[in-house]
Length: 238
Length: 394
Image (tube, each protein chain N blue to C red):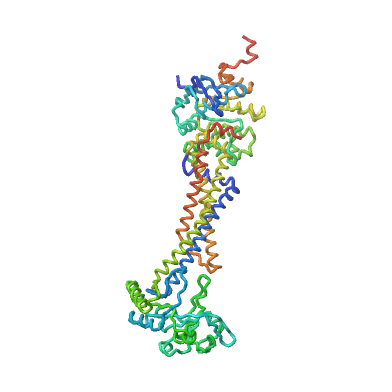
């Protein structure tokens, strides 16, 4: 058995707000094998965003053990954590978070800049990735010249250009209409199946969550369910 | 991240906000240009004065009654021609001794008239000081010994009295007494607004009759060599003090004059540079302010960069380079502007601005240092931003 992409053991995260301790996660254990496809669902305030930040190495747990790609984040300095994010995590955000006034190609190549890759190799890799998400004809375009769906595809290309172990997508369809959102989800699923990247969708949309192979439901900072999604019409047929 | 990459990113960020970058730079541009121009003016004034003092001649010793001090009142000279003879005996060579007795007088030639300085001198003046003639001849020893009414005109006096005519051989009257013009000095030009050609030389003996005095204002001695100046000065002062026990005498050398003037002009240049330095500092504060605003405005960008793997150092370096670019580009522009303004000042005003390498280097160095100093705090703040908080910001 290979090491899981991410493993959290009894992880808690408590914020200090004006001297008051606010627990966001109260002990979450979660194992994400390579190539997995799971959805983290829950109402706002359930701790799903906090969990995503932890799984992506943007934050460190207050207590508990968090291992990303075999490395325990507890012992890592901010610079080492940045390197870990660069090498093993890809992020897709609801608001795309593309750099304005920067071409699609340069946006996709951004993670490679921090990897120290030369300009030529970067452009080649980024162009291939843009091609992969179906935007080979939009490399020179800037974010404000692209539609929402295209912008999210650029963001997906940027997340995957480093060939990460985990792709964390935080409400990736939240700013898109249903048809475009569906196409973006289909692309994510396709990439998950092809490249073996573990796909983690963070969403409050039940329909989106229902597409995952595995569904984590959260409430008040704890995981309440961790199971394959129950699909209503299948339940009636034994 | 590679450093070359960081430069490119910083440059792109500045380009993306041209107006803001330009206005921020303007503060540095003005500061650096002010330093360069003001130092150039101060240095130019100093160089001019130095050239003039050196242009008087070499190994000069000037003996005057009283103290050579800027707040000392002028002392009425007790010196007379017999003291000059005593000094000449000490020096052992009449051609190395020059004297002056000066009075402001009205001079007329035909219908033209001018008010000018009339100097009673000996025929030795051109051997002691560097003065050359454009026309005619200088005074002779017999002119001095027999108190002839002959005069040598400064270039601008000659022009005012005679226009384009050759004054040599013409008559001019000084204080109502007729003189024959025997020569005209080559022009020395203006310096610091003073016309150095506005004077007339006549024999000291003639001057004594004309002014109704026997005094000599000062004695100048050209020492045979540099090493002899100090001892010669002491002996002359001792001799004059013996002859006039109630009066104090001072012997000053060109080095001492240069030293005093140099100190004054050095302080002036320093004050000018300091004032300009303040504006450079204000420019630096502007850079710091803009960088802080920039960090805040680009919080989401910082969060995103961190999410995709930028280390705190990468972000810090990027913002620091932006500040350094702002100040160095501003600094170079300011240097160019300062040099240009210096040339304009030189061309259009009597102040000869002298651009010096040290002022350029200093101004540029200070602006780059200001960029680093004022860029550090915003850069550190950007580098330390929590990526989670940064990504969430609007």
